[in-house]
Length: 196
Ligand SMILES: Cc1cc2nc3c(=O)[nH]c(=O)nc-3n(C[C@H](O)[C@H](O)[C@H](O)COP(=O)(O)O)c2cc1C
Image 1: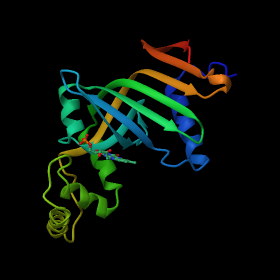
Image 2: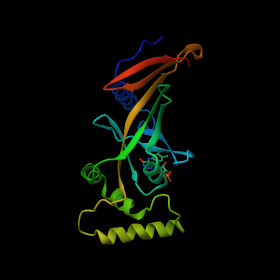
Image 3: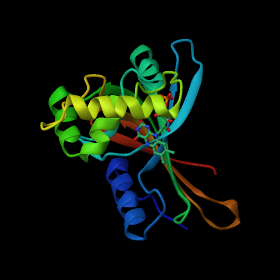
């Protein structure tokens, strides 16, 4: 049986993520991001965890995508990590906001050139006529930035999620799994154990 794992759920998230990396878990960065329209219609998809910045969980995307539009209208989001190799889950609820342009620029510069051009080629979530049309847009971006650094598309960047609630779930025998629910309480976190 597991005792309460600690007072800072974000430190625990980072340590579980590192453990998943260390054991060679498949897609250790993958997290499901749920957003909702202003009137509460949900949608979910997988994005990649890009680490914490000042205690906020980061991912990168197109601000004009469906998820981006939903976040702009309703910043309340949920995130779920599941590492099957560890049989552990982390659920996060909080508010998403765009990172500063400087932070998104810095991250964009760290990407391989082909990914940078791909960001220009895709109007994420918009209808595209064919794969050929997508490749054509990639070629146009290549031509546009030939011989120079690729600028960050203004509609592409980091979001940062300020967690308000974090739940750590660990598998345990007899379906008596451990659930530790943390809610923000000012600067600290309030911890409750939940029934599985
Ligand atoms: C393993 C995996 C990782 C992904 N990582 C990202 C990501 O980091 N950012 C992103 O915008 N989309 C990522 N996607 C694609 C999204 O799941 C989704 O298809 C896309 O962002 C469009 O979503 P939307 O139309 O709801 O905005 C990933 C998909 C998979 C399966």
